[in-house]
Image (cartoon, rainbow, N blue to C red; front, side, top):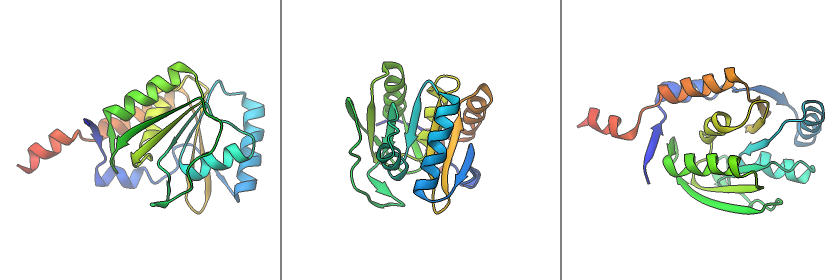
Length: 181
């Protein structure tokens, strides 16, 4: 397992802010607003990151082309995803990192255009950045904002650039290790 990126403490604070449009409300309220947005925007792809948001989308008849989950919610064990899927891929991605394995799996899943679940051993939160970077323009990436609602990221050139800036602010594990030696 090769770690490509590691979040810094400073960046961790910045990443707590919504990366897209925050839709506040209950599960039912946010899912209704999400369905309206999909009907209006007709995104070429829908990608969900996180167990609760992915499960709620499936339960409300919205089936993302790609779901990225870790079978945990707020670091507690969650019920495994039971949505419609053609393919399940398992990857390792420790908390606070992005591994090459996860990066490749996301890129491949988006390119292949099959309904895919990527099940992460570790943490999936930072993989939102990789989903935005690899998704086509006008795709929608959605993730949960704990205790508040969901965040919807419409993929644009600007959002891809912003995700790229976040990645540049991260440090590869090798660089971190060399500094501490």
